[in-house]
Image (tube, rainbow over all chains, first blue to last red; front, top):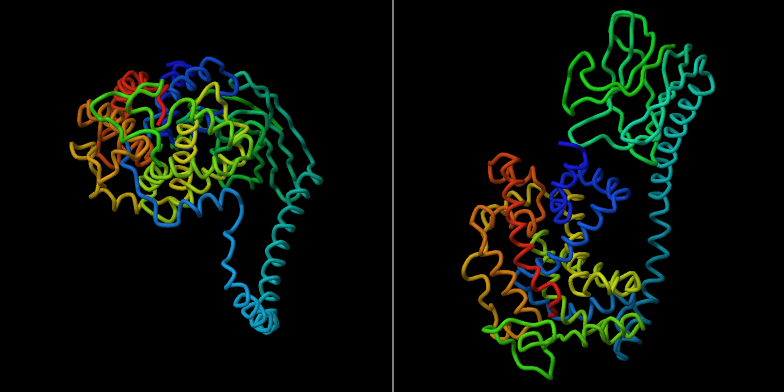
Length: 245
Length: 217
């Protein structure tokens, strides 16, 4: 089955939303460039427009209709006039109470702020570390990649001091359903499986990788397309990129 | 909200897009007027739309979410979008009520999948039922007069024309919002069988429902 035949076969599934999340995402990306599928999807939507009416209607709770209108208009219902003095009294009590509440809870806020500051500090340290690998990179390697008619690339920033790589894969669409882009280390003892790379148009994938624990000197890297769930120790699918240091 | 100018729907005769006997609850002209008034920011048009559509939208959302409060939130979102973004509604390619139904269904599915309410859905297995004989019987004395009841009857008849195994997958896919793999797991059948049954069922439904594409409530 060609890629387009897969999309033809799953048009109705896309319309009724029975595709899995990754399939639905791939379908949306395909639709952006396929006028035929867009037109067929619109036809199917029109044909099935009334299908939701197969449900048995539910009588709204009392007051719901009014609440829905007010909600859509972004307003609340006007209060009855007798509520005004009551509301004024309540607001006075509330203002006194809220002053006490604010004073007593300010300590709680301080704790929350401290936790948040710690979290931001951790994220900042991670970001600095990532940037450090890029700035200290002793070697930078780049390979052009073409996948599904899209041109992208693979860049490796190799930090020889910390023995870590920052890897960026950009400009590539998500693989077809049931497939993944797999990153491999090339060592002098053979290929070593690393991690799958989540490719997506408009969103480059960034990875920070340590060197593999398997014996052998790292000499380069490769990117292939493999079956999802595969744990083969050597690439089986087509190779997208092959980079030697 | 029944049109004061018309009587209850006549169930023995099909509705026609030109506002035939059963279609007079919301004629094409009235729907066009409703859309025009919504575009003109007429709040009374919004009230009218809410009264007509809410029972159906609630049923769609509640069927998927199994939670009345959350279903009401979804319906609220649908009407808010309809009111604020009615300018995006393409009158050439669609109808107002189906547009609202689609927004509601998509929002409900997004919530369903976002919340990962699989356990809740599994518990609802016991309440699962295909489109049985009694489902078109009005539940309330004036239900048959509700705008849209004639559309409901026609859709329901098309669903009941399907073989029972296809009804089951359509119910789980379309009215409960499950994905292919979830349906396969629920029914204990291969994924390929689910896809085949759905494809056969929806080919028939598209043919069966194409004739009412231009109907009004």
